[in-house]
Length: 234
Image (tube, rainbow, N blue to C red; front, side, top):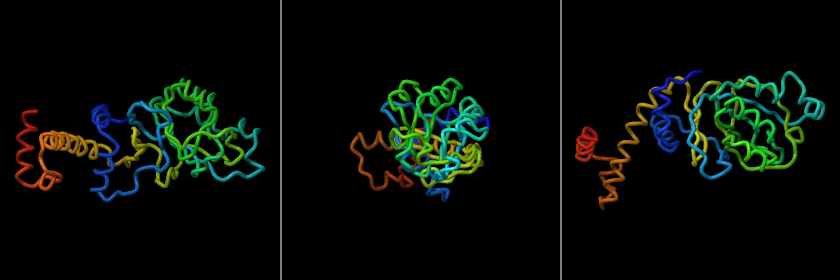
């Protein structure tokens, strides 16, 4: 999926918190992926199309070091990742087996992958950090993925952190974690969210000037009118 440049630019200036509010108003409550925390402070806010990977519980005849050479492997999946995508990995919340280490993350960075999101963990933490690849996960563990997981395939619907993610949905990540925007709602959500951000900017200005919250957040008719005047001259 190629995201419209104007939509991408709009989304890049919006927080995941605002996106969850906009999606809530559209009836979507379960869009924030649990356990997806930035692996280090200061990672950039990123927006991109989801490239999905799926693991299932380890089965001893399949989850072996030899499986890393299979045509259906994490190595092969990385070579299929397009530039600018956000890789979203269903690790079923497993935290005692790292899905990727430094070498795999380095290859993702070389291919121009924008970021990695998983409800699991990585391994070789110092090396992963050195690659510069932005990662959102639950932390780190030394054991390899095959000690607890079997890789199944890529670009299929997955569940990550209790959230359904389909290939080419749009994923946003920032300090609050990872949020998914359904593909068909992206342009509409971007427009509404931009308006919401402007409104909240004005509300924050009013709060800093000593205004009380009732009738301001959310705004009543009088304050909506005041906001509209402000927005026209912004």
